[in-house]
Image (cartoon, rainbow, N blue to C red; front, side, top):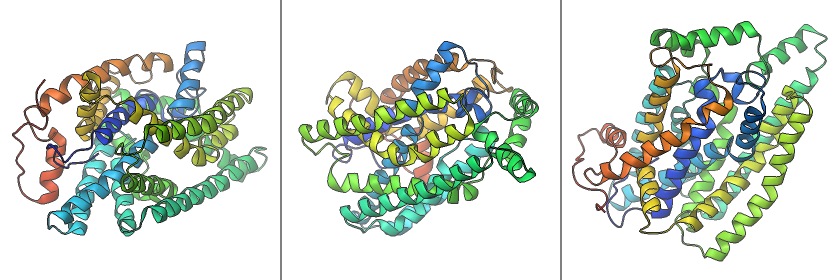
Length: 414
């Protein structure tokens, strides 16, 4: 996400295109979190059905989507953040002042999103990690990669400690083991049925009731920072390195992108398949869900999503209808991301259509193409009239403390 001007010569088509795919792909990752109790995000046993279509949907999203879209989003956020800082300084502005004002506004917007619309907000977390990322913006590419890898290693060690805890609690023969087991069940296993029904009732009720539930149960950005901050920072640093090296802007040779895609998918893809099969073989036991979604996925995730980036760059066709539409969706990714949350809240929550907990896992994914079509339909026409997306303009105006011009085409009409 970025609020940089979309004027000719200032945009990277590859960056916009990849961001467009990421904001469309993250909907696939988030649909279970929009439409079912929180525990169903990882475990098909918690909610959403265990019919063949539901298990196929779980399997496919675990292997191809879960965590990868978030990782790609974080990666792109780091690249865009560095781009904004460098352009601010090139224009004579104070890069630090511009950056920290943007992060402050993003944090406020993210908290509003978290408590008023949807518990799965990532923006407030990005704002906090983005402040930490400032310390590394002057590093050369190799150092960015090295520090990023160290952050992923740190997150892997943290995941290993959590994995050891849940395995140690497996026997459930002491009160302490039972407490630990039940704690992990709230996210990775099957919580008590009564707890799941209370969550469904909260989101099926009034908007104020759902706000109250989120206020009580959602993880605050400050709590999330020590839990997943190292991983997010690592991805952002990788994104900075990708911008500096030209990887994310399409400057490498097509041979290099093909090689990167083949190695990444060839290494990480089969392991993800084996992890999914292993979880199924163990009856979706939460211990093995933790192994698959935390311990093993942490080092594998950046390998696979950077391979996705390479594939997407190879797929770009400058001047092509689809490329232009997807890139436009990427230019207004901030609006598309928050707009999707608002739309899904209307579909699932009680103040709207009230479908929370009523669709199976497989049925949820039927919504994705409809939302994608909406993104592709509005984004480019809007940008033929305005310089920024609606919420990009709000973010830019609040960050700079003065009303920003919005009229004027960001892209040429077809």
